[in-house]
Image (spheres, rainbow, N blue to C red):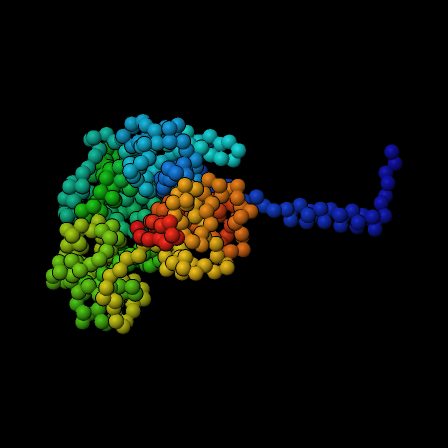
Length: 470
């Protein structure tokens, strides 16, 4: 066959068609990113597995037969059958859905779910609550042991205390005298951080009995030739239950203030000193002489994060922190270096009048509607808003909001034609659990303007309601 020489115009046309085709291909919609199946922190010790999800137990709705799991910033909703599901709790005992009732598995606890998928619907086969890590008895240290050493300090106590958690968790607060040696970065940092003396007392801790990062660090250190290794398995949760943690000025800024994480910041200096300057957001709490009376007036949740500072991070702040612990508060931090340390770090100082009443408002869950906003809609529903009651039909028949539309949670995917995308959608139920699940379900279906009511609601037959914030 003879070679054919194509006319330049034809070549140009072909080239143009090729470019057009390339443009056409690149313009095709990109598939949405797949949801994660394993929490980032879990990847330090585990790998993603097909047909499995590893994350944190968030909620369960028996009426909706759905379990909600958090995987970092993502949320997964998985169906279950109360009689068919196999649940293995942290003690190794096996049962069915009864093991999910009455908060037997705590919110935020690490779990692994094995599931089957049929028609795009995931159904739980097995739920495993992460058990405490098994650690040889000779490696263990108690809270009392750590308290004694911390009271002496590293030099007198002759020890090295390492926090194996990732840096962001360490920044939020740590055990006094601890140094951060994150398990994920152990191999890179060990040579620089660990002592030269292979017989030195080295203690690792992390996020509690189910956390494997501190025993994992101890094992890595053992392989490097260290012989006097210990693990404080109760970790930061165990320490915080009866002791205060510490954080630096820079960590207060980066981990709490910059991220706008709700907390209570108490300035315990004398009024004459705090008037000259303070850390933005601080509450006047001049308890440097007698903290008990002021602490009695606090109206805060016992687990609210409270950060205390004085002039130099000395006696006054410690005394107030200890009194707060005695009063039952379990999440107390001390700002090392106090207000002077804050200034020396070059961080901004605020002047003016300090707030005198301490308040703590937890950060709303993603999609949570302000209750005052919801009440306005419930009283007078704008044309731009639709309220969807996601309870079962029998519950709705017993009483529901006058302006609400009843679409049970299980029917949402089949009734999307009844749910407009050009309105604000507010979901509700009797506890907030199914309402939140409906929020996530609608978001996954492409709805962008969705909120849910996170509260207990009692409905009357006449359309009235009583709402209680948790």
